Image (cartoon, rainbow, N blue to C red; front, side, top):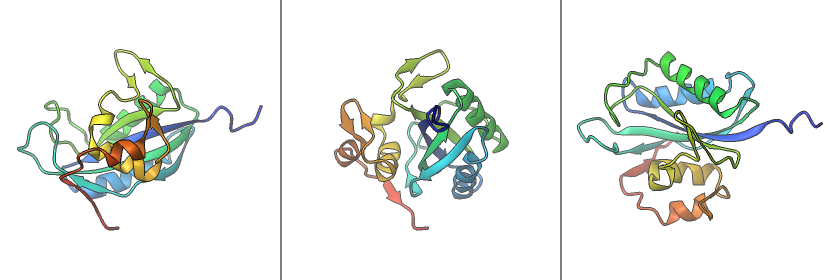
Length: 165
């Protein structure tokens, strides 16, 4: 068996809007490469976006990362939630402000639903702050029969701005 054949490609959405959000996202991108049995394969530019939900909070900094992993979906989710905790993530209200939010968007072509995790992420096709960075990173990835590039092109991305390095 090829040593690489048990690796799976997964995509992770990153977001932050508290306590130096650009630094939280930038640091988290590097920290993804240190997760067990996981290698950071690439990541998008950083984007600023208006918050979804309550508008009485700062804008978000978002990105999408691609990892190659040998972790199961739930093991990867556990690692992502542990990384959020290292960034002092506090869940005070739904769609509220946060130091770091990590969402497992895609895990290979797995379609899966448990009480903890739904794959693909159920709302990703509705969110420009996910689609635009995903299309930049992996334009050929298919969601609901369309490529991420097609979905991003036809999505209202008003309020989303690519940040310069």
